[in-house]
Length: 168
Image (cartoon, rainbow, N blue to C red; front, side, top):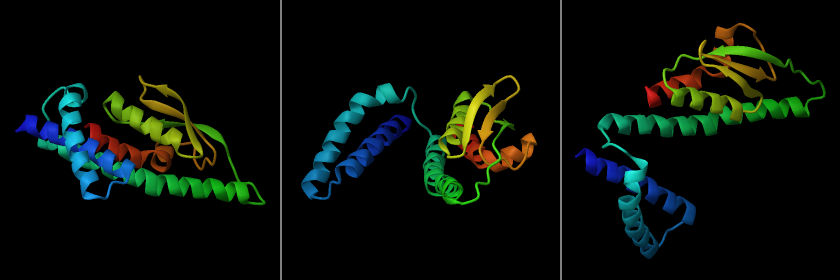
């Protein structure tokens, strides 16, 4: 069952990309996409997935998709609005600082997801990572605290919650 689930996961991903990026709506295009995606999934699955997937992997995938929507629709929008207010304001209210932000995830994948999310969010950039102390050094354009735990709550706590669920 795990092997079938692995192929279905790859097929679903490829077919979803096909439909979204081609804008396929006709029956012919959708059927052609199914055929092409099925062939591609048979060829690509061994490269993308080295082991058979389990139900827990589907749950992780769900959290990954939820994280994507949270990041793109909430975190990014709030950050862009905040930066737009600063740029358009007559009184520039910034307090740039480099703050320590601890992280608690146990995998390098989780750490990378958090660091990338911080850096891609306007107003924050990870400038250094101390993997021994498990701390990011983040340049924060509108620093409101220098206390590491409070800075984590404001900058990366939500990213880390998702990273824990995705990467364990």
